Every structure is written in C-alpha cells, then in structure tokens.
Image 1 (tube, one colour):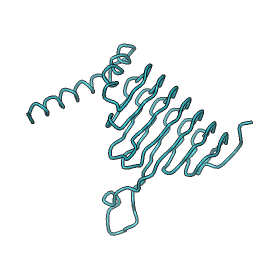
Image 2 (image 1 turned 60 degrees about the vertical axis):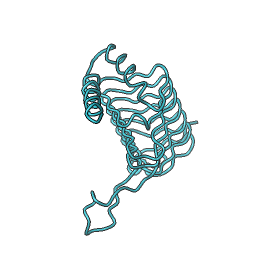
Image 3 (image 1 turned 180 degrees about the horizontal axis):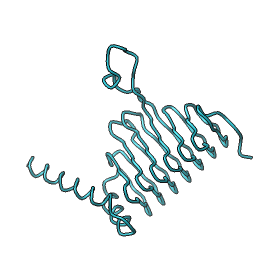
Length: 197
C-alpha cells in the first residue's frame, strides 16, 4: 500500500510538472480540469496561465472568473486560514501569494494585482543573536484585501495589513500598515498620497 501511494504521488508530480509548462489554450484548459478538484473550492472560468505553481491546494479557495498569470506562485503550507481569492480577481505575471506559516490571506472581489507583486503574511523571528535566523521560526500574521482594490506592479504587502475597499497601492510600494477606504498609497514604507474622489 505504501509503495502504491508513493508511486501515485510520483505520477501526480510528473503530471503536474508537465501541465505547468504546457503552453496555449490547451494548457489553460487542462490545468483547470486537473487543478479544480484539488482545491478546497474552485469556481467557474478560472484561468491558470503557464508556469503557475500552486502549493497545498487543499488550503486554497478560489471564486469565479479568476485569472492567474504566467509564473504566479501561491503557497499555503502550515497556515491557519489558508488562502481565499474572491470573484473577478486578476493576478498578473510573477505574483507571489505566500501564506506559509501564517494566519492566512484573503483577497476580495474585483481586485487587480499587477506584475511582480508579493504578499507575505509571516516574518522570520530574529530576536536571538546566538541562534541562526533560519532556526528561530516564524511570526504569523494575516493579509486582508477588500473588494475593488488595485495593487500596482512590484508592490510588497507584508503581514498584519488590511487594505480596505476601493484603495489603490502604487507601483513599488511596501505596505506595512492598514490602508483606508479609497486611499491611494505609495512609497517605502507606503504612505497616503491621495484619495479617490
């Protein structure tokens, strides 16, 4: 039984690697068919472009009409709440959503996420100088993105942040604290630079 389980896991791994690289509309359709049943839940019209990597499908819920761009990475290992992505969400190329060792990440409806955006809901602990940082564990946090938010290219969203409805995060911003409704933020660290009228 153990050998059969290992063999099945190996076959799934090979199939997954083959599907990740498959180009064109055929790749999009096959990835959806193969991935859909592996998620905690997955809606209709979900598009996974080539190169997108998903880790721990069972901790991820995806709504309807979601586009996951080229080479996107979604991690949900050892997380309390997993990852929830709402309806009509667009993740551009090279987006990383990393909920490993965290309380989870939630993305609302009608959210636009530009290329190279990073979500990271946990930090490394580094308080003890006599122990290597990699051996000190993680400090778990969460990220919540409400509806109708636009996050520009190369932005970084760090733990314990809530981005409220209608907000805009400028390209290259590093978000370390909450953003209010319809606020526009930019810079490192991100500060309010305007408000949607």
